Length: 288
Image 1 (spheres, helix red, strand yellow):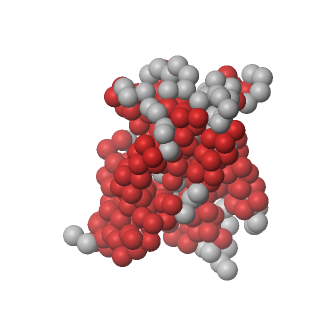
Image 2 (cartoon, helix red, strand yellow; image 1 turned 135 degrees about the horizontal axis):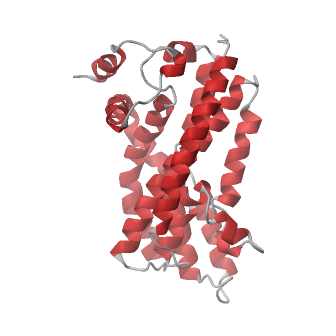
C-alpha cells in the first residue's frame, strides 16, 4: 500500500460535521496518526539527506553552550559546572530539534488562509493531526543524526551525565509528554489566525516564551527569585529544559514529573477543545 492509498483509506470513512471531527479514543487516534505519519515519512524520503543535515542548522543551543562554558571557566555558575552546561545544551539541541510547534502553528495558519482548511474539516480526523504528522516525519529523519552527534559533542567537550539508566528513561518520557503538552499550546496559538488575518506576530510570541520559559537560553535554575520554582511546573520546560537537566544531573527530579506532564496534557486537551469549537464558529474560508 503506497502513501496515497494509506491516506485514502483513512479518508474514505464517512465525514462528520466539523464540530464532531474529533479524535474518538486512543485506538482511533493511533490508527489515524499512523496512516498520516506513514504518508509524511514517504513524502519526505526524497529529501531525507537535507532533513538530516538540517539538524545542525539549528545552532542556537550550541551558541549558548559556548557562552555558558566561557562564563563557567573560573568555576560553577549558580551551582552549575562547566561540564553540566555542556551536557545541558547538548540535550537541548535534541529537544528543540524534536519540537513540532512550528509545523503546527504555521501549517494550520497557512491552510486556513489559503482555503485548504475547509476541505480538511470534512475529513474524519482533526486537522491539527496533519501538520503534527509533518513535523514528526521530519523528526524521524533527524533523530538518528542527533543520537550519534550529541553523545560525541558531550564526550569531546568534556560534558558529564549522571550515568543512571533510570535518569535516561525519565528524561525520554518527560520529553515525549512535554512535546505533546507543548503541541497543545501551539495548536491553541495557531487558532489566533481564525480571528486575525496577520497572526504571525502573535504566534511568534510563543517561540520567544520558549527561549526563557523552556530553558533554551539558560537552565531555569539560574533565573532570579521564585521563577525557578514556578517555571519547573509548566509544559515548555518539560519539553525543552527538563530532560536536559535530568541527564546533566542538575537538581533532584523524580517520576512525579511524569504525572505533572500527564495532568497538563489532559487540561490542555480540554481547553483546546473549547477553543477549537469557538474558532470553527468564527471560521470563514479565505482563498488567496
